[in-house]
Length: 112
Image (cartoon, rainbow, N blue to C red; front, side):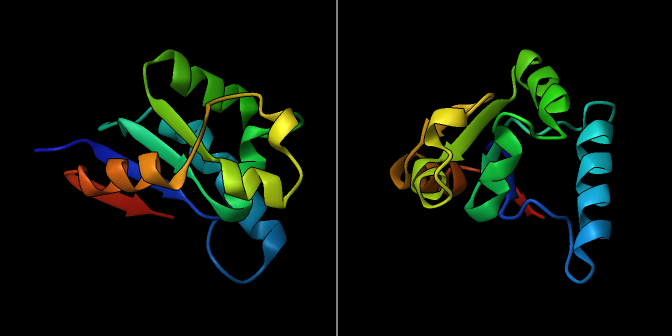
């Protein structure tokens, strides 16, 4: 009954080989714009926030998703940890209160 929420806790997809994980996350976000159902909210946490900053290989895809009305929340504490708060290029810098609220109100949460 609530929104579909996608959490991205890493700049890589899966565990193991980081180079492969980097390729997979790029492919995932490129494909996400062409599949259904679309998430209503995407939450970036931990090193996943690196995907939302200047120079990210998925920036164009994230902007396209944002343009389609998908809300992108980016953990502000995580941005500070990686010293990237002033480099955010897509999404809304958020806090744990808003992130927790989105997760708790979700009808379904998918975490990569």
